[in-house]
Length: 417
Image (cartoon, rainbow, N blue to C red; front, side, top):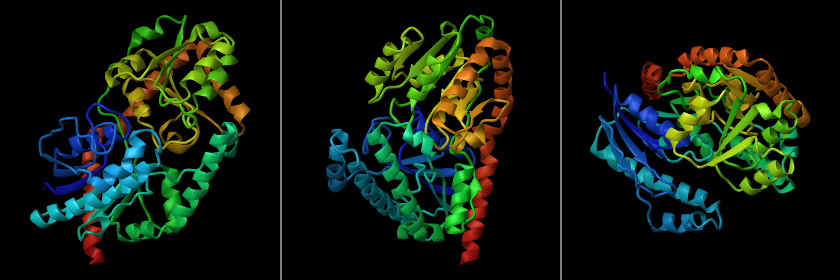
């Protein structure tokens, strides 16, 4: 039976990655078996940006417009003066979304409300207070950061991370609003096993583990790239900031034995671009690193398909979308062994680097790259492993899963009555 689902997805786009693609892919897939109404806040760069024309069969998209208060609150963020003002505007937007949701519920009959995204647990909104079955997630945001990774950051970034972790711990454990929302939720989805354990330990609530994103479609493996063993092409995709920690990979490249056989493609931009380029220049890496900047998603996929190994060095993530983009191209991933990568990457489809000390992390990344250079056949075997593992992470296989989640949430709601 088709259900009528009211979905809250703050950002959505068919052209962007990250949270935008999570919402788009979910709605595209689940609208095959359900009628979906989507409340959303933007499809562009900032809250209230509805520049993208969005439409799908069996889906009604309802943009929640910003009011004067929301616009004023978000203005410093849009100007780049005080980015934290966004959180105030975002909370206000949730209230506006709640008002719009109540209007829709009064006019139409919905079977369930699903708060889909963003992934962070900190803003729990108000839709849980509506008297309908309520599902939330997948959510994350409670992950810890290893001490040695924090100490590797510049001093001010260390301070920011410590404040964030302390604030996060207090908020997760003691937020009255979060406790109310969790008490009301009929089914909770958590994006990582670490998050799943944290909710059980702190709030004694069971949840269903599900990575927030998945693979839309697979591209045939580019076999030709394995025929020329002269170069191992690496790819890094992400914001050039302290959290993504590209500097860790660059430090590892400095120690690679046959540096001339490596090319690192860097996709993305950010506040550290100049300093990272300077590091490359100071350490003789300029001929082995190619900076692509911000490019279209189609170009990212194309570049990914030409690469041998994708690398993530983030100190904190949930399940970054680029994992699935790499998998869709049959490209193995090297990552630190934490966050969502711990759950997703295995020995078949990539490399997980244990975290014991920061120097050890750098040396282990270097060792993997050296091993790939010395044993090019290993990269082909890993690529075949990616194709095998990818079968477990296809969006099309989530239709039955989500339909079962809907039924469970509705059943839990009815029992609570």
